[in-house]
Length: 97
Image (tube, rainbow, N blue to C red; front, side, top):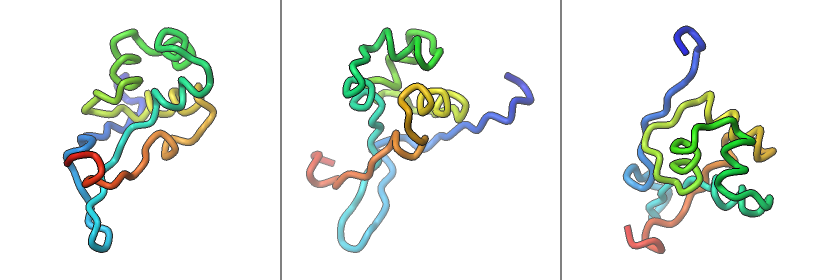
């Protein structure tokens, strides 16, 4: 999509930590959780967000490493939330990091 103005985010999840006081925080993608809460499986989620099956799988399971802003916007629209709602901050110690 040349010239579409799409933003590509390249911050890997779980690998880039932020100091917040004494705790280390990590970012987790919540797409799969949100989709399942709406009763969507991976196929219906991918169709709702107009994603290729492989792309839907990576976002659904949180294994995506490079984020496309246009894709995040389509996912947020399909899941009826904001793009920022697709991510959550978690305590790195509680998740073995």
